[in-house]
Length: 150
Image (cartoon, rainbow, N blue to C red; front, top):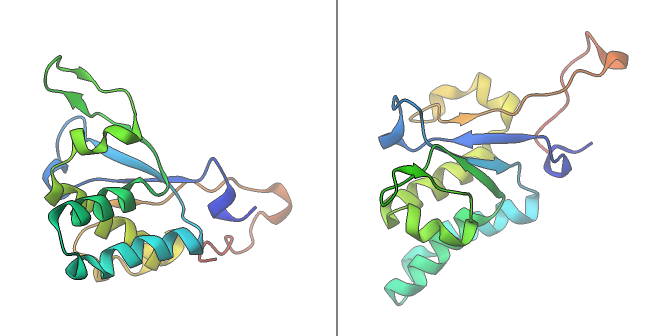
């Protein structure tokens, strides 16, 4: 099954400011299709052409929602309890600078698939994209792992 259509294939993105926190907050994504990844790249590449702040905000948060399927350890400051996952509440969870960082890291996840990322970690400033677990198929045990860069 292609990784972008596998509902079990997810990865976590952790913002720089949240690294080493215990527990570590993170955003859970499904692997993007080429079309979805293109939409994230387009949002990132066209920010400078935006004429209003609200246009920038819409593009950034919209791109961050593409493929977002959950979050972990996000605490509601009013109750000090975990916030239930609601993608429409992303603006209530992240400052615009954090959302921009998340969008950039999401874009980087498409450039470097799970297998390439292991080999090319040095190209990224950080190792915040964690590859999804790949289920072993008994028929292909001992062969090369599936190509995740589709």
